[in-house]
Image (cartoon, rainbow, N blue to C red; front, side):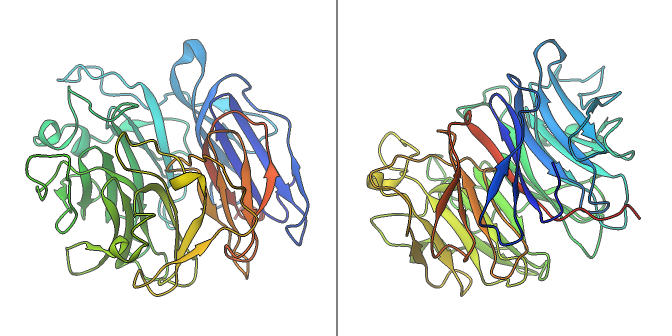
Length: 378
């Protein structure tokens, strides 16, 4: 399928799809399924060449692996050496899933990072063909304290996600651990430190520990890389560096909605604008839209205030949206998109003001990523 006007890449519990739009984003066409029946955790386009796709997948006897396509999904090749813990791993960890993919720095062609479950980190220097464990993280002397191991309390197992790279410095990275918290390296991954001051973990005996938190999604703004946002198990937060403390901007959400959810997405040009999808975090944590009234909330003042965006969304509806299942495009106005565990994709081409369902009856949606219009390889 052509991506000349941009597209949405869908990873689901039973395969992957591409949703392509016309120039005005009014008409959408869905591709044939790719890897039908297999788990596609994350599908990502390399923005450095505009044509290479990577897919984090679990495919039957192959187990957790990565596939690559150099022709926008027409053909796929498995990585010759997929992500895996070291053969002599001291903790005898075995990778259950490649959960997250992030292209490397713009100046590091071919570099990719992957996050796994349990909470390992892996790097490829050849476009995703061969992967090596990032020993600075995986073998860090504090890994067993920081990560959920061996008692993994996260419902679907512990995972490393939200690999963010400072556009000014390829050695400066942030990651999220569910559970464990946010961590930072400034030397390319040789050493790490927790970055959780200000966020709370109400499920722990000490609600303000150094680590042990449960960030669901962490984002760094590309135009203001000293600003980070996170949607946490315990609220919505913002951090402005060099300050190393999170501020709970979710306290400004309506109390009857709360500030619990999984994804958070940022306006590509405005560091003050972000979108979240709140879910019910009360009692037994149903993880569905509060009161069956789904809505996206947007802030345009860095979290000082939030506005409800639900025009076009059904009521009642009990949506669940996973941490990778929300994305934005780079158009003006910005398009905002989310996928549900019930197999629907919803789109707003006016920054959340109105919503349309552009795909339905798909398997449970794990991830939605915007792929910018294809460009010639440099």
